[in-house]
Structures are given as C-alpha cells and as structure tokens.
Length: 119
Image 1: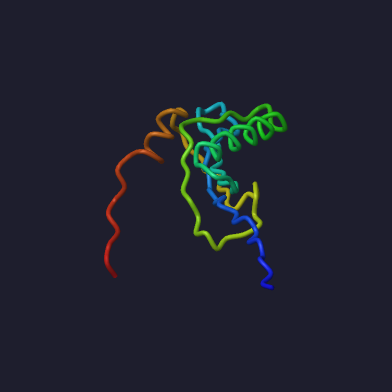
Image 2: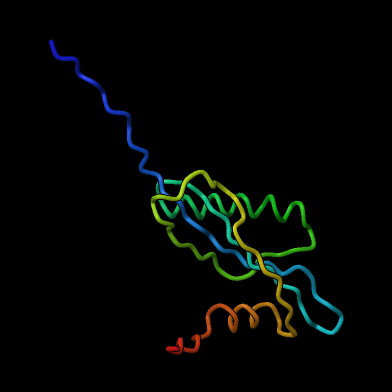
C-alpha cells in the first residue's frame, strides 16, 4: 500500500523594494533636507507593494508631521532567495539642496544620469 503525501503549498510571494522621497524641512534660505527611504515588502504583485508602501508612508508621516512625500514611487523586485525582511527599512539618505522640492526631485531622480565610465 503506497502512502500519498501532499506537497505543501508553494509560497509565490516575492520581495519588492519601494522607494519614496521625503522633504524634512525647508530652511529660511530656501534650502531643503530630503530623505530617500527604501522599504521591503513581501507580496504577490508589485501593485500590492505600492499599496503597502502608501500605508507605511501614511504612518511615517503621521509620526513626522513636518515631513512631506514628494515625487513618484519607485520599486524593484528582489531575488527570490531573499527571506523574512517584510517592511524593513534597508537604506536612507539625507540630502540638502537650495532647489524647490519639485525641481530637486526632477534633477535628482528623473534627469538623465551620466553614463558609467569603464575603469
């Protein structure tokens, strides 16, 4: 008599890193402090990763009422071997600029980048 074994359901969710840009404050001279935050979310679709990022962003802004999010969301899918990092901030940087928020975002994140030089 052979014993049949059910295979466990395979988890088809994937890790997505989602980036958002925040303005921390504006100085009297017009300069600004900007933060680039990248968070990880494990889900089945990139659309859901954006939804989760928006929920987390609302919480972050609730804790930091002087901050504002600027620009668009950006995301990429991590390799399938990555495990157990849901909603962990993986990188953040603060930048200063004299530019207005929209222009800062455009020049920093959407302007054509210089090509990489071969060493």
